[in-house]
Image (cartoon, rainbow, N blue to C red; front, side, top):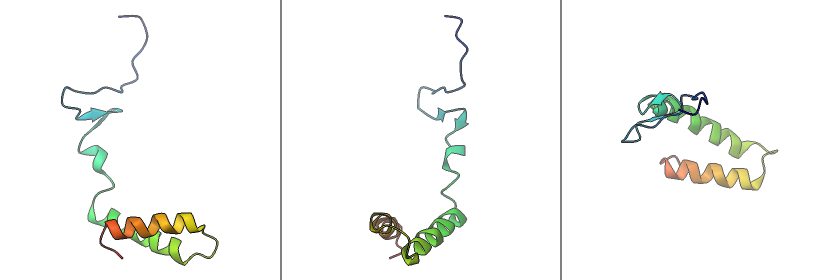
Length: 69
């Protein structure tokens, strides 16, 4: 070893671990509740008059990709 401390950012042979988290832990934003909350945020973004058109377009695309047109 070179004497340099490791940071815990390891990857197993199948790529199931990164930054110290298991593959399951990395999917924390995929629960039904998380998708609903993200959807609410994107819908609020669309109705905000201070939001840029670029940001609104990004929200439209996210909503379409998640069946929330």
